[in-house]
Image 1 (cartoon, rainbow, N blue to C red):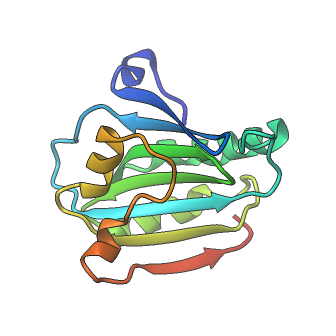
Image 2: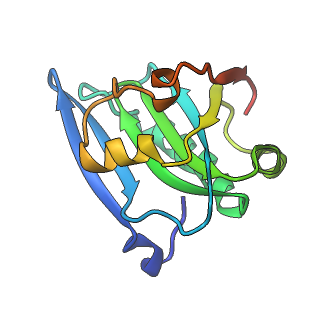
Length: 160
């Protein structure tokens, strides 16, 4: 995601390691003021990775191109980007899931093709963000959705 220098001050960078493989966390330092109670995750799994679990350079560039589409999404706040161990996950919070999807889909036309999975669930206290913000751990953090017993909808979207 392209950010201006003032925007970068609101983010923290954290590294986690698990069995010699690494994950990089870019997490918002503060919570948005708006009432954004729905968490949306966009996950891109990849097999083309280096020995540490990060995407190879060509794939990383494709992911960065894909991420630039998020700049125009005003119906949500991007709060977390995780890269490593075979996946990149973008986590947003929104008050309007349909508005988010309506803004997101058209932005992907002409961008890098990828099979991504999109899930969403209610998370009014930003529990997932708080867990990552406090404990930069490798993937495997318990999902607040699953802890409450709800099942997030997910769909594999090819051609994005």
